Image (cartoon, rainbow, N blue to C red; front, side, top):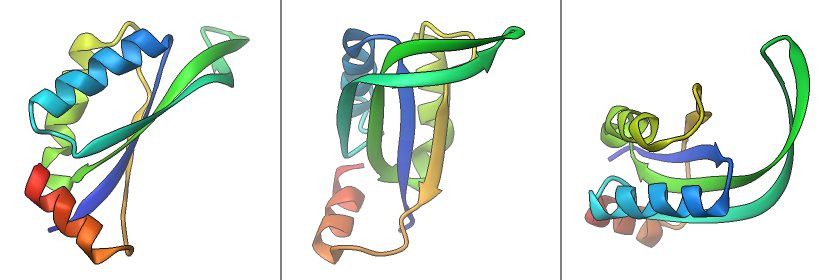
Length: 103
């Protein structure tokens, strides 16, 4: 089982929570952490912008990545939502088994 960490940003905490709850209900993620009111700075449409966003970190299995991206894109308010993943290469093995069991 290959576990991955996912990362997403959302324009509001409400939007982030709705997406997380849908992913949990579909069994696509094991858990998520929301960090609200993050200062984000980014280039978009020929300008530099600042926004308060909610960061979302979630744990899942590699096999769910494509489904998660598709699901987020259908629910997200952004034209091009940030959804990225990286491999989890170590950690508490009991926690890793829990990720596998949950999703």
